[in-house]
Length: 152
Image 1 (cartoon, helix red, strand yellow):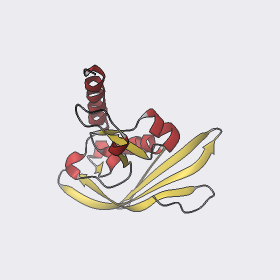
Image 2 (image 1 turned 60 degrees about the vertical axis):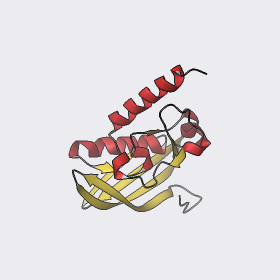
Image 3 (image 1 turned 45 degrees about the horizontal axis):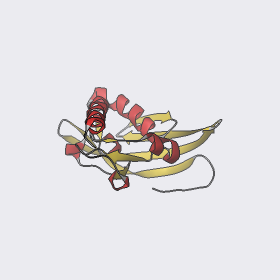
Image 4 (image 1 turned 120 degrees about the horizontal axis):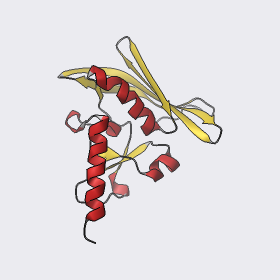
């Protein structure tokens, strides 16, 4: 994570990431910003420069911005190889409220998440771990039901 200035907008991430589509892999520039505040709520922005195309999305946290960006890319078959795009990661309410969605939990089947399961949302991830937004939400729902119903 890179903090460039104390003012706004503030760059939180600026680096190359892997973007994949049906066996095609390309490097793209990814930038994450904290644009400031809209009243009491922060405004996060994410940008992806893929070839000549620029994709951008904003939301009240970085994870939600990433989801909006992924929704733009998925119809074209693209996936971003970052931790927040893994099928088995999802933020908690606390990581969204207190950390701006900059970290997500790895949800391991049969195990409740702990601090040891936190990873940076925009850190690199293995291509085999990626999923669509819908696959990620389905994994979260199944994981939550399993953990919720597990004997104590």
